[in-house]
Image (cartoon, rainbow, N blue to C red; front, side, top):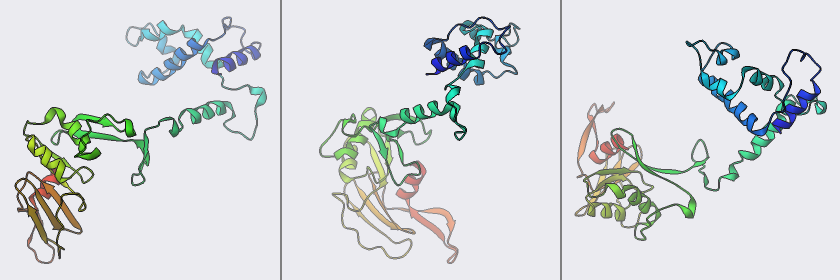
Length: 284
């Protein structure tokens, strides 16, 4: 389309102000691809004038441009570049000259072309590619990730752990039995997963949903700072009343309260919070 319209425009205007120009040679598809790539490259090497990209001055020379085009050929393509036949121009369409490009972009960038794009209504950007990412707590460096592709997602699936647990064990495969600690949110946390990780010398801590299989039924916690916990050989299940109930699961912690460094504005006493909550907030 761009090649056809550019050549059409040049032929239709050949008699207008072109007496000193070099004879026109019709553009080709490959040449147009190279031309557009050259235009995209130019902002990365900013110069005062277009002709400076073809300068032979050794202080500012960028030979790549001369290797792609002569200066005159580039300027000829630039001055004749067209996307639509002018004879069909409609005054009510302000974007007439680039309307075909806009229409093609709409088709090409339709979100339905990507079958594994996810709709997550709770996010600000509701459509996107869903990733499961394992990061280093101290540096933030990405250690591994999985792209969610629905039923085709590559997982080492373990029936006892379900999909979310299998996501965690797949990401951690190279890091088990090395004494690492994992911090996760309630999408992944479960007693079954944390027990599994403990067997492979990997501690875990995270918020947890109260209805996860294997959790005890928590007693009602009254008042800010209230707490209740349940303990097995390896697992700590802890519920603490902050502004809302905070439910934690950990194989790393004891039910210890630690200072927050803040003072209650009424009682003037130092505020405390569970150690597992403090370290979870620091490392998530």
